[in-house]
Image 1 (cartoon, helix red, strand yellow):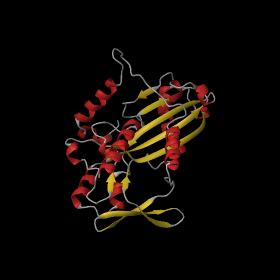
Image 2 (cartoon, rainbow, N blue to C red):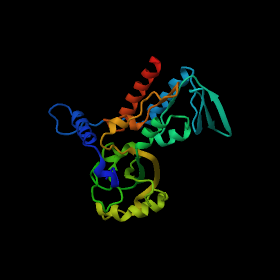
Image 3 (cartoon, rainbow, N blue to C red):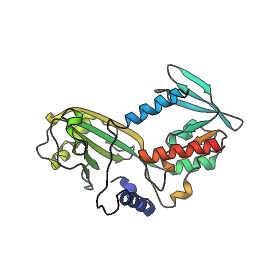
Image 4 (tube, rainbow, N blue to C red):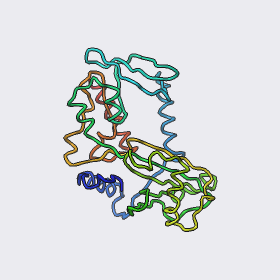
Length: 278
């Protein structure tokens, strides 16, 4: 379900790693995972990071898409980005955390062998439809769905883990999906996707009705999940790119672990140490 038509290309190393991490997270003697949740969501972590960066004299710019990494004589010297207009600023060091396909567009000066590794990895895109509801869909927190006729792969009712009182008495449901970018589901609007999902959600609870939904949100990610094929370790690009002063840290480099917030934090620490050592 996660890898779509590429399911039979996925390395067993990835699957083994997934199982090892899941069972390794369980306290000794327990048969179930012990889960934790940051009350207030990961937004609290993001806000604190921004606060600390500013306290240390740094700047944080949002809604400023990068158009190009400026390279001169084999060294990355700055970024061209867009706020109200295109702007170029110089930097001593640049760390890119964008998907590999976006990185190749930003830095066409990368040598062909490094670009080959970047282009070798394919992604499944991700769709997440979030529903705020008056009623609970079921008693299950995390429902994985392996029925190929259902157009989403998981129904995660967050308020079966954190109590609804935390969310004003409402119920929060995530309908999660992985699919290729050319899937007919990917460009659908929020309302169109909800209509598409409706009969399948009703298979979980036949009483479910659109009147239950008070609000909804749709999130898309073109690079939701790298497809981990055999011999994947041989195709992982180095964090330190062939261009001086330019580094890459993205989800294709977390292998054999799976992408997730905890491994993103670990990757951030790793890339910081690499940069400081250079």
